[in-house]
Image (cartoon, rainbow, N blue to C red; front, side, top):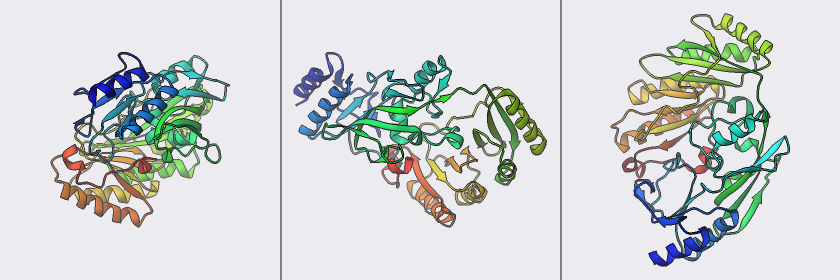
Length: 375
């Protein structure tokens, strides 16, 4: 079947754009059977119809930065690479349609020439539009502008049967979580580039200190584009806030925060090195925790008690979503105990927890996050 399938995929995608899986084409530690790289929505549809006809398991792939999030599949026979679904069109000033395989960084560079941007900043540096939307990957700007899904007006996709469709959803928000197939393009809302940007930062050593400083900003209704925290454990950490707007208004608000926060608060024209980056790498067990901002303090202390050690935390102190990295070397049973304990803590505070990533040998025995938990 291998040769005939490869021939069929090449007939759809073109010579050189279908091949057998290589060592770099792994999902959950297992190599995929084949890789297809279609160039159009029509060829995506034909590829998925072929997969349906031959009962093949498939997975779409953009840059691959989030391919190992969630539960590892038993095996993938076909990776559908979206790298040739690239470009932006139908730019009307307020929105634009972008192909799913286009890197977010390329879209931002093109829009910047027109004084615009997407108000998204996914932490994965190589994220594509489709990959970002598939898991609703949000960075610091979610605090002010909402998630990428909330800024998406419509999505074109191909379902598992190989049929093209468009999702508009209610209030202009497409039901991305319900899409079972491959996103091919999306109409996204555009925002003007801000005239000025400033980061206000201060060192912090405890979750209680973070809570107090965030409460100061919230109580005075100081409009920030993002409020992020990085608590890397024994070496202390930092709370940072992004201000955007006119130069005068940004400087005025920055001065007010400096006076209110005191200590070693500083204002800078560039972000801290950790800003908008994940605190984890390959092989880490990562928890995605969502709670009310005022409850993050209790959650952080409970996590320390559950693990018996300080746990690195990074994410939005303003909307209450952070990533926690568990110590390495834990057994699956120990991780499950920690997860169960933290879910009890969060249940009482109307929060939630999902296991985002874990090494393949652990992931099979953990209650890993599903796509709807990412959204």
